Length: 152
Figure (cartoon, helix red, strand yellow):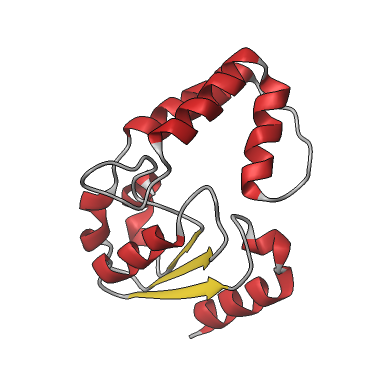
């Protein structure tokens, strides 16, 4: 979401999928990933990239393989640990479609419910029985919802 400021003039609508404005749960944001689970993921990736990624993919609920560089993943995890985009949400001044699976084990659907309340012109669609990747798990439904949103 940090790129939104850079493209604000060129953005008419925004689609956020399985997102969260703050990745880690704390006393100010109960909808994030637990610190213990995040530390476990971080440790697994530091110790062995392949087993760490398998652990992550198990959380996501999909099975695919890809090649990643360990330092890039650890850098991304560090950014997720520190970043809090909640102050930006009320400033979003375009229509927003939030799509989230109710079985997402990475980013809680409660995070999207929170964003739907805070973003001025937001609409939330929750996919039942779907995890972190609704575009993979229910691609036709996902495509239809996004196309309808972009067309109106």
